Amino acid sequence: MDFDPVEDGLFLGSRRGLQDFLLSHTSSTVKVLTIESDDLSQVPSGVSEHKFIQVDDLVTADLLSHFDDIVSFIKTGLLAGAVYVHCRHGVSRSATGCAAYLMAKHGISADDAVQRLRQCRPCVSPNAGFRRQLELYERLGYRTSLEQPEFRRYRLRAAAQAAGMDLSRLTTLSEPLLVADAGLPGAAGPPAAVYRCRQCRTALFSEHSVIKEQEKAPGVTAGCIRLLPLPWMTTALCQPRGRLSCPRCSHKLGSFSWLPDSGLPEEDFEPSFLITRSRVDHCPPRVAALCIAQRPLAEKPRTIVANGSR
Image (cartoon, rainbow, N blue to C red; front, side, top):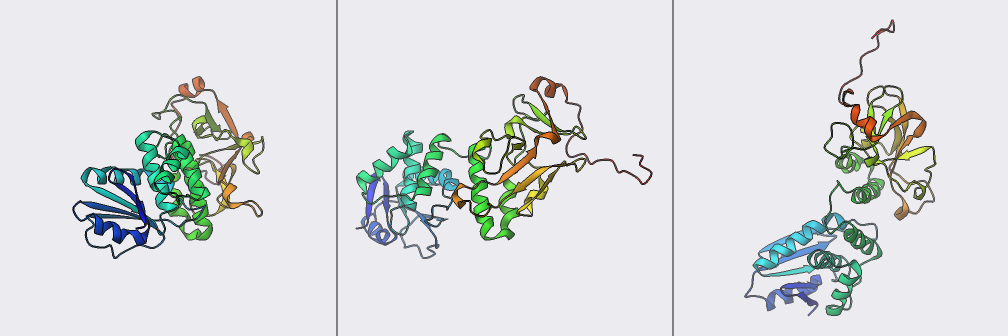
């Protein structure tokens, strides 16, 4: 039988082991979590609920974005009976899902979770990409949210990899990642230094949106500020590379790119949203807090007529 008990009520196995598991658990309510490339539309009878997550067993595949749902499904399933988690072989994808559950339940590290699984199922071996995702899940405190800068950067990389294969999906993939800056005047976040367009003085972003590890990004120099994407960067939704401009005066601010330069390993690439330092002014938190009377970003610039008046 190709399945093994992980904890009371939780089982990890292969696709082939599912039928044997169901035959041996006819007296309990069974929920099944499938993590595979192809949907198993023909789920055997005796399953009270089936959840399918479509993920390939690749180092670039995104499983982290599903961890919260996986943990919730297993947790609620165990309240009702047994939960069987599987992929094709019960080695990488399903093992990663079970590891995420153990981490969230017990507050343990990624390494400890994988070792616990190997004690009950020695063949467990999440691929290198999934191991990194488990380690990130640990750093994130066993939950994921786009409000967390590190998770948002992870999602940006995942979106870029998917868009690299199908650029027509770029808008759909990137739009949810343009999260409002909580540090701008009038926002709910804590006071922060604000950067304004040097030409029209519009508040564009705060230090909350600045990625501090500038030196780790290829092509990022001291003359650039690297950002998380923001809602006013609408041009970044529909093309792989381009220019970033002020949403009020259209003054050029910098550039963006969703695709890696040639020769850069795909797994090391992160989409870049770069602002030229000389095109913005830095306002310390106290000064920024006083500037609450600035026009909102949503306000359109006044039209310039032919004689130059406004």
